[in-house]
Image (cartoon, rainbow, N blue to C red; front, side, top):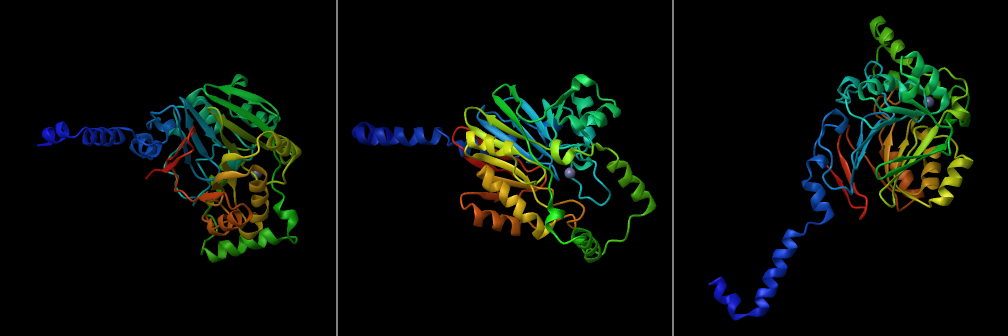
Length: 344
Ligand SMILES: [Zn+2]
């Protein structure tokens, strides 16, 4: 019956062929939805699937300001604070699970950004890229000098299909914008409201051990904070910043060259007080999509709502959307078409 119809009508044949062709041709969004790399919760560094399409980048939030960025065979870890202080929410991935990394980028060498870098670097052979002030801690933790690349801002690093530009940022100065003692009072009130008992002696010991995995350089605030701008393929840009300090000359100069970014990973904490510096970074980087981190740690009841900063970001920059994703959820981007798919 169908054959006779087609034979009888060339127009019907053309329509049937066009319909078949459109079924075969997947949109970039459909292709990402069907790629296991865009659906699995396991980070690629822990043995999860890598994306099939060379234009697909996968970003996972791994708690605090930790992210995994995977693109064209590169597995980049951004910050490494997985073994966290007691009572933190489990991320679902431990330092020992991370066996594969191309490079580890550390935004600044305070413990809640660098603590697990030596462990993961030794396991993976990856180089740690961080400000010079990270050097003492990494060496003390037994990492060989050739596995540390010090950057001060201005360096350009090349990986297959990826260019990374380091730029000097600034540590947050939120406390100086508030009445004296405000943050201490806020932290105490949050502890009380969360019905938290003080740490047990065992928990205190564990917390002290985690906090000790940190650089002690007094100049971290001014020379230790490095942002990284990743250009994936021709022009998909991802900015990683892990402390919401005042916008620096270096950041402004870089953004004069690159007027906007597609994705920015930015930190949010200290509730209302943390919103103004975050909004300033959004105005500087002009991202299409923002991932927020740092809001799941101490001082924020282990979960500050992303709603107030997301709303402030949208009000200041209507073209910017803020994601609120769970730990390990893959977020895929087609770096050519800029389509996005959030996995399970
Ligand atoms: Zn810090």
